Image 1 (cartoon, one colour):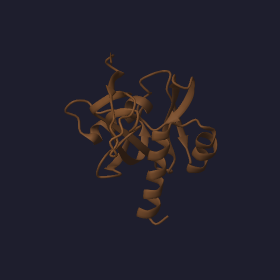
Image 2: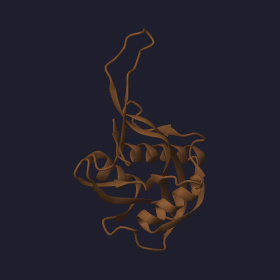
Image 3: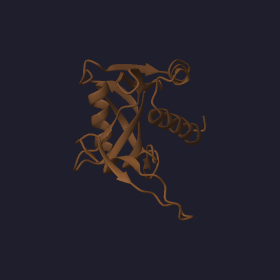
Image 4: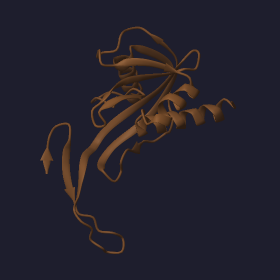
Length: 174
């Protein structure tokens, strides 16, 4: 339907299990693409996030560093690259939060597997790649009070951070 390199759109007619044919649906074609979300804390336990303009909602939002996995790149290398590009930080102890991946907006996109990777002891080694990007270091309570409660964090980042927080509490018995 629309062949833009960043936003290709496909048309799909859906038939329900009961045999009802639904209206044609337009979907963002992200089939075969993989993405990482890097949920990272520093040695004090503060989350390292990036604040940048999000043009869909026309305001600056805070998010965990997120991006596409390049051809031949493993998930950890992709998360390390995204963290460095977006924040200028490096971190240690990388691991995958879940063994699999999940799809964002499963009713609006075809594909686009996301993996959440976590790391700790982040430290600044450079500046963010873009001057539009501002690094945020936030405690859990500040993150929730200043960003999540005011709709200033995208759903994918919010879910990744909340899942990670729950995982840390269970794993480290906090």
